[in-house]
Image (cartoon, rainbow, N blue to C red):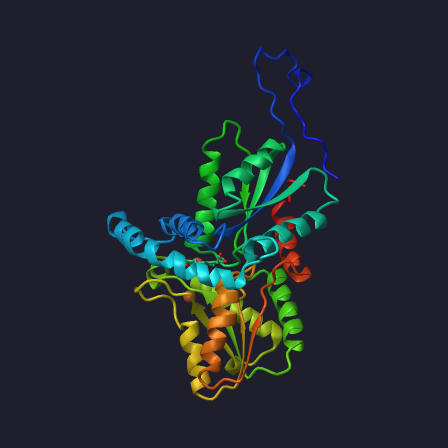
Length: 353
Ligand SMILES: C=CC1=C(C)c2cc3[nH]c(cc4nc(cc5[nH]c(cc1n2)c(C)c5CCC(=O)O)C(CCC(=O)O)=C4C)c(C)c3C=C
Ligand SMILES: [Fe+2]
Ligand SMILES: [Fe+2]
């Protein structure tokens, strides 16, 4: 049960309030789960709005604006909304009329609140960096409910400037408009946290046990990024590699059965390699018949996993001689997934609760 928010009374200040002083609720703690975002619909205009917001972010596209603006507005935003809208339609949650990443993110917040309900005065919410629910609206909602301390948890196990840093930028942009800012904590990346590796290993064991085949090879695939971001000092690549190694070791899988790859290349620059699609194709062509893919960097299944991995890469494998293919689901709102979020949140709330 949540305690009622506190408010400063004249008794606290030992003097009468000057007339007109606004009484602001405080005394609660907010936990805000942050993920990337997703379009509000699969039609041209919601897709275009989403891609415009996303691809206008200088943390995502590090090109001079004068060079990027015409490419984005005259080329990408004319063709990509239609093409990607069709892809989103294949994975859409029609019951709720929303993208899976939204359904899963909401469930993660509900489940986390359930795990924390023994603590008075904690409110759990969720928000997106792009589109809805916006980071600003949910930080304001927490503030309105009396949260004067907020823990931000970007649900990216591996730090990357195009994901983690932009989530923080957006939260701090919202604070810039506030008179009484809440105190903020930002949870660090948890790529090698034993709670995360253990949850991934438990989840993978369960998924592998449900298959009607034993994969010859397993690929741990991570979202890619341009190589030049890595060269400029982004720790993402190293953190992905470490997650992958720790996970393989936790599962006791021999190194020659395990590969680490990067997916979702966008544009013409070289991205982190090896590329997932090229690796899947090469494995099939060189005689691998049974393959499983897992995407440890995604805390929620989304377009990049459900469509790109489970559908596109399955097709590359099967059309090049592969026979059995499995995509092993992300941690999502499974008990293992909530174990990770709860462990990080409890650790980062120390001193506040
Ligand atoms: C163009 C540059 C991009 C970089 C760099 C990038 C990094 C990055 N992204 C994720 C996680 C997700 N990305 C998702 C979709 C997506 N990503 C890009 C581009 C970059 N991502 C685009 C253009 C899109 C939209 C789809 C498309 O048009 O191809 C998603 C899925 C969201 C959903 O709606 O389901 C996630 C999640 C990470 C972790 C990352 C790290 C380097
Ligand atoms: Fe992305
Ligand atoms: Fe590295």
